[in-house]
Amino acid sequence: MSERGARIPILFEDEDLLVVSKPSGLLSVPTPGTQGETLLDALAAQGHAGLLPVHRLDRDVSGLVVLARNEAARAALEGLFRGRAVKKIYWALVRGRLRPDSGSFEDPIRDEGARASVHPSGKPATTRWRVLAHHAATSTVEIELVTGRYNQIRLHFAHHDRALVGERKYARGKDDALRAKRVALHAWRLAFPHPLHGHRLELEAPLPDDLRALLAAAEAYSPGR
Image (tube, rainbow, N blue to C red; front, side):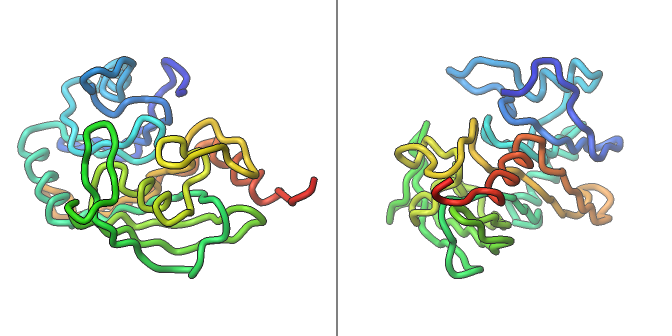
């Protein structure tokens, strides 16, 4: 869980946009039936009230979130996301040795409310990946999210027997090698044209402390110890 009252890092702001690094454990926006502080609450406490959400991250996922300051920016940003003009790169730690070293998952995804599933009647979904490093029991992966289906990255990797470390929703059992308190997924980089001015923005959110510690444990892990 995120530390209550912890300050949210702001990575970019102007009169139209705010780009922040959301900590794990914080809801992006209010969700029916789910309680807890949201990113909007935390930012309002920092003096940034009235922000308009454009996209979201799962509660346990950390990283970059873009918010609009006005309706014109929100409408334009929504158009950029729909038109796939926003390049979304994630960092993840997955179970096992992912092979080949690059590729994509194209399995259609059906939204089932609180969950999602790979199903022929689902919507097209594309997840591209590139292995950054292999470890004894895991792989560090850079992921490009081409489409934005519900739980897409988590579901695609679990479906192909390479669930993310810390995954509990779509993978059974515990991580074989590491103990993770949350899913090892971080919205790492975003690149997109400013919705109202057109200049290109390229932003990166450093890995939070818990994921850096998890990566260090993955790198140090040796079977049989």
